[in-house]
Every structure is written in structure tokens, then in C-alpha cells.
Length: 312
Image 1: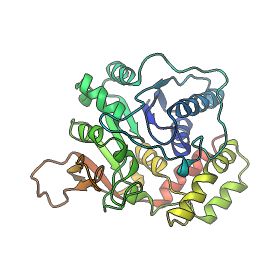
Image 2: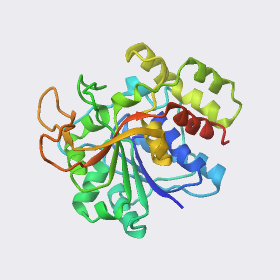
Image 3: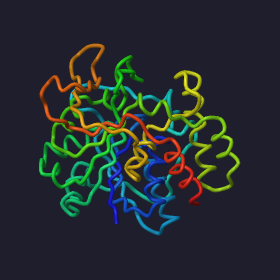
């Protein structure tokens, strides 16, 4: 049994990533919520809503642990223009039964890593504030968490929130710097990798024609993001930063080219704040701190997506 924590700033791609894990029968031990895409309270509501829907399908509970509402050092901004006011366009995802846990996400991460040492995998598809502070409080988690999958950063310096910085790292670069240098076994999936693997018109129409609840949910929650990506980000469809990261976690064969490299996080004040620099020539002399994905197998990725869309 594979066990996961999914750490999210719950917009559409976080939601679909969660259902990818659940549809495989993996045990999601906790949903931890962190500052990011939209208003924090709405992120928590979205997480509770998706946990309720998953419970309907699987009969098991998925506890939601609210975490940090802000970065460690500086302020940040949400991106409702990208994801819509509710993170899924303008639809309201309203939980009807579940309530958030009273335990803080930081303590939940520590507790779960102690309960499942060497088993727990951490899907970090959001800013890294929760994980960084959990490590500062209890550094042993770097050896107890089996694997950390980070959606964040760039490999070629093409950002999405500044010209050089990707959003998740930019929100809290101090946290990212802590995590990348804490000794976790990290696989990094960057923004400027995933932009090459969007859902194009043929796949979009295929999904629209599917009659499953998951496919219908997909079209509903991705329409706003798809329009934004195609009109503002020069893409041929909607990208899947979190879902590609989740696909790599589920099936390592999705990642076609992976290199072990040293990743530097820029925490300076200025236009490059939040940028990631890859020491691909080993100039710093530092040992690699991440496995960096440079290309994926698009067909295998699409297989993972369509498996989930056909699940329920």
C-alpha cells in the first residue's frame, strides 16, 4: 500500500491530482492546505469538498489539515485571474458534512511521518511553507518521508509569475530553499517542462464526450484555466503542472529524462526572486539535491489522465 500526503493550494489541478491518487487505491493519509492560488479559506473548502466526493466513491475518510496562511518572510499574492475566484472558475464547491481537523498541517506532517516512517510520500504541488516549517520543527522527517515530489521552479528560466520565476517557488522561496537543502529525496517537475504537454483540442473534445462523473467534473473545473492558458499564456490547451507531477509520482515511467542536479533557489530581493537555477555543469561543487525531470512520455501521461477520468 502506497501512502501519501497531498500538500495543496486547492485549485482545479490539485483536485484532479487528489482523485488520481484515490482512483489508484492509494492511501491518502492527509490533505494539508497551504497559502497559494486563491483565498485560503476557499482552498480549505475545496479540499473538504473533494474529500467528501472521494468518500462517496471509496467509503473512507480523507482528513483535511489547514496549514500556513502566509509565507515565512514576505507577503505574496493569490492568482484568481488564473484559476477563477473559487479555484475552479466561478463554481462554488461547498462541503456539506466534513470539517477541517483542529491539528495544524505542520504537526500532521510530523505525526504521519512518525507513524509511517519510510513509507510516506509527500506530493508538494503548492508553495513549500508547510513542509519547510515541519522540517524546522522536526528535522528527522527528512529521513522518515520516503519521497517528496515538488511541482515548482523552472529549468530554463521561463516563469509564470515573473519573467524568471514559477509561482509555487516564488510565493515562498525561503521555504523552498529550506526544503531543497534539507536532505529529502526530491523529484522536481518544473513549470517550463509541463508547458510542452497540454491538453489539446482533440483530447479536450474526447473528454467532453465522456459520460463519467470525473470527465464531466474535469470539463467544469478546467474551463476557466483552459481559457486563461490559451488566451494569456500562449498555450494550445490547458496545462497540468500538478497532474503531471502526480503522474510521475504514480508511474516513474512517465518521466522520460531525469537528471540528478543541484537546484539553487534565489531568495534575493529583485526581479529573480523565487527563480531556480540548475547547476547542470557542477560549477558549485555541491552534491545534487534533486532529481530534475527534463522530459516526459506524453502518451503515458495521457494514459494516467484518462484512467482517472474513466474511474467513476
